[in-house]
Length: 94
Image 1 (cartoon, helix red, strand yellow):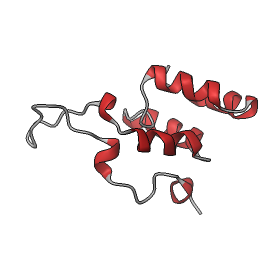
Image 2 (cartoon, helix red, strand yellow):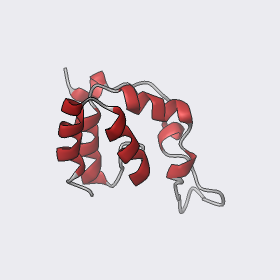
Image 3 (cartoon, helix red, strand yellow):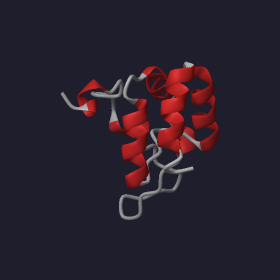
């Protein structure tokens, strides 16, 4: 089973993770990470494969549905072991 199959976000609406910015068009889509709904962020907070997601997301420019401050808050809320793993993954993209 892949990490994607274990992701807490599996089966959720795609627009949770890529909310369109005001004024964005289909021809020139822009996304507003600050508009990601709280229920989406809560899934990331409890996800058992967050580290794998974050590492993969770094390669594609998507930051596991978080802002810099959001990632910092999530790191603080995780156990020391998870914090150490997430720190290693997050160093990939600052």
